[in-house]
Length: 482
Image 1 (cartoon, rainbow, N blue to C red):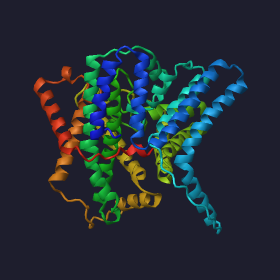
Image 2: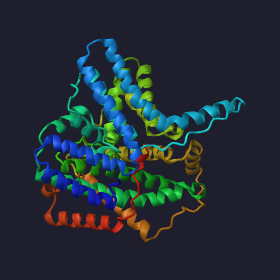
Image 3: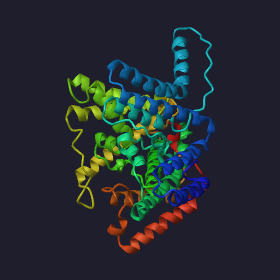
Image 4: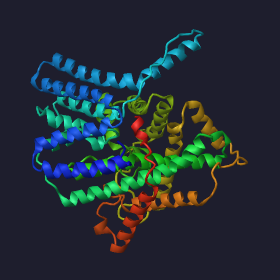
């Protein structure tokens, strides 16, 4: 079920009303109800894949209890290995089987050998990467004795399947979210209002920004050989705002929806395009995934300790794994490598923790140095997104090559018309609102305190009217494919 659909527009208020009227202060019944509606929400795409998430839930629930009760090191390691094997095994089969088969065939082709192996006709289950990592973090934390396993099956099931963040995050840790399913929840008007504000802004970013940028990005990327360097740059910039509006928009809707039911999810985006270096960008982009890899891959490898070689090795590993997590395509792997290349000089020079505060925190505008750093970081990010967006490495390198050979005689592929002017103005509107809210959890948070009444009303009215005007396409979110 898509957030930007009529189905969800009916599903959410109905679920909200039933949750707070029939099950008020009844924690167990609330968890059973949330599990039920979450399975309905997920099964809306394909009910067959409910079996996969059910396997993950049962396996990790039982292994968590066994880890709590067993003290022998060997048996605990076997239990953890079982959890990792089952979860990553399902993920690898559905997401990466064809990738390895195709590359295995290609490798033998280079040696002059022909192998007749057919690719498997698989449908990638929506959100499998997200809930797999969420359940894995639970068993790993129980194994490391950072948390105690729960015996409450309904709370654990609701934790794994919680519908707002089930298919595209944030990837929640059990330490933060699971206790919230074990405590009594009471309706809070201020929290719900804040949730609605965040949902509104998320809908704006998805429906108004991302889906309109997608039209121009797709036009240019699908016909890039016919475009001038200016047109190619424009296409890359439109995709840059498309993926941000799409993914951060989903996160805002998910976090805001959770607030309606009394849950607090972790912030997943912190205005990353205002970053002053790549290290800051990765602290602000897809925070839940970046922190997951840091805690469960980077730090166990040694993190930033040890020799320079080990530090560089660890950075490359973390970005390679991050790229591969995004999809079974060499473009994602080289996207990860490029970001590692961006990051390593900062680490070597010990400048990767310089920009930890929000940009221009006590000022209305950045200074010249901050502005130039922000533009440089944004430009490097745009270049990396070309790899992410391209269908294969040939298209990615050809696209970038065509930018720098300056074929200005070619057309831009898009004409300057009212639609292009409108989306450009909407992007500027997005930047202004987000810049004013950059120190907060989301752009519209606390605007009742921060903004003049009439400015606030005008902004709300504008956002709502734009959403209603562009609503109806029901475009899928980009990160559903991951």
